[in-house]
Amino acid sequence: LRHDIVQVLCKFEMIFPPAFFTSMMHVMVHLPKEALLAGPVNYRWMYPIERLLGELKKSVRNRAKPEGSIIEAWVQYESLTFCGMYLKDVEAVFNRPQRNNDGGMRNEKLSVFAQSARPFGDPGRGKSFSRNDMEVAHWFVLNNCDEIMAYLDEHEQMMKREHPSHLVARKHRELFPQWFLDFVNKLKSSNSPTFSDELYNLAFGPIRAE
Image (cartoon, rainbow, N blue to C red; front, top):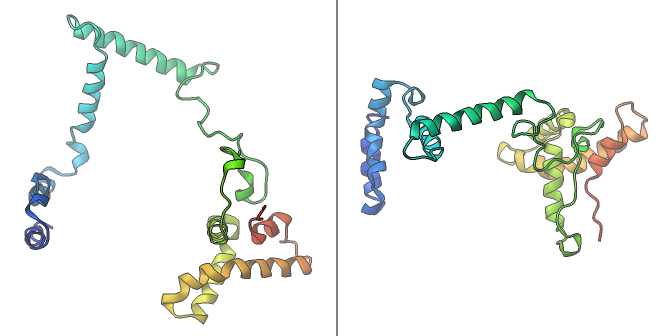
């Protein structure tokens, strides 16, 4: 980077206007040498120190006695931190319920059905999802369900055997939902022990309620 950055900036000057080249662009010339001499930036970064000094400055209430104000504010902060971390019945920032707390997890076989949810907003004013939106949402759920990763891998390998490499990802996304539904229906018809109602609901996809 130290040897190439000069040529890169020269090429940029042929493309971008002069206003693009601020001091932050020029500093890239010196950053490789600085990192080589001084080491990783996290050991010499002043930003956390400046943030701490800013917080201490905000705690000053009596400008005639800034040291005493800082000490008093720090004692209060440490006391509140102790109460919040070690007193169970005291609600503080450390044990406060999450803002979007939906009631925890339920005991379900599939992780996607274990999460509780609550409606948000006015359902009467909401917009209905298009078919493409429903398909995208269904694929997102299928692709992020840990329990069916084996089926995803199996179908992806099948697509690699049947299609060229540049089409594998698109075909895998387009064909997997229907392939997975057919596969689950076969499990259901054969009374397979791996079949479950949750697996069928996951394969069936979202239900459109008009």
